Each structure stands twice: as structure tokens, then as C-alpha cells.
Image 1 (cartoon, one colour):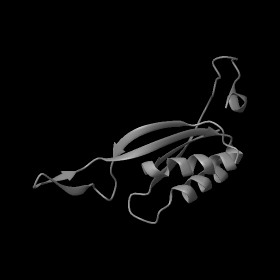
Image 2 (image 1 turned 30 degrees about the horizontal axis):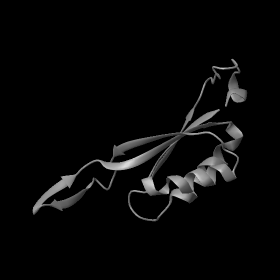
Image 3 (image 1 turned 120 degrees about the vertical axis):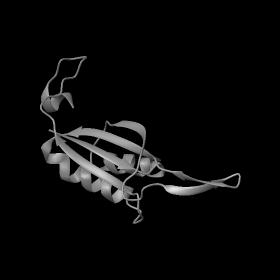
Image 4 (image 1 turned 90 degrees about the vertical axis):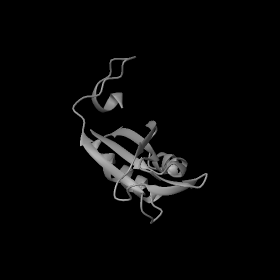
Length: 112
């Protein structure tokens, strides 16, 4: 099993959700996060004063999938989240040693 974490632009969340549904991914965890990468924030003017916004709002989508679903899931996320502009985000894939469904005590891929 693998855990996929994707950091995407907030307005792309619905597109990512739909794309994952099309490849058979049913569950996910979504968090509102802030951060920056190479774009390093941006400058805004408020009431005549200029200031730098370092941390930009992003959405973090987390899913755990069987090894066989990793390529389909990452491909769907990448395609749905891409705008072609700076700040589109990142996808991280990590191994998951164990998953346990609390309600039924199912383990492994059955728990996912």
C-alpha cells in the first residue's frame, strides 16, 4: 500500500475529487494548509501599504491506495490539478506498512 499526499490549489479540489472518483478512489482526507515553494509568496498592497504574503493557501489531499492503483491515482491528480502556472503543487508517494479499519478490525488493503 502507498500513501499519496497531494498539495494543490484550492480551486482545483473539486476537479481532483472527480478525477480520483473516475479511477475508483472513493475515500480521501482533505486539509486546508498554507505554504510556499519556488514561488515564495507574492506582494500585495493593502490600504496603500505594500506587504509580502509568504504562505499561500493550499489544499492537501491524502489517500491510501493499493500498489496497483498508484499510477492511476497520481496521474489523475496531476492531470486534474495542473494549470501550467507556478504554484500548481506537488504529489508525494510514501509506503504504508499497515492499515486497520477501527470498526471491523480489517487489516491491510481490505481496510482501505
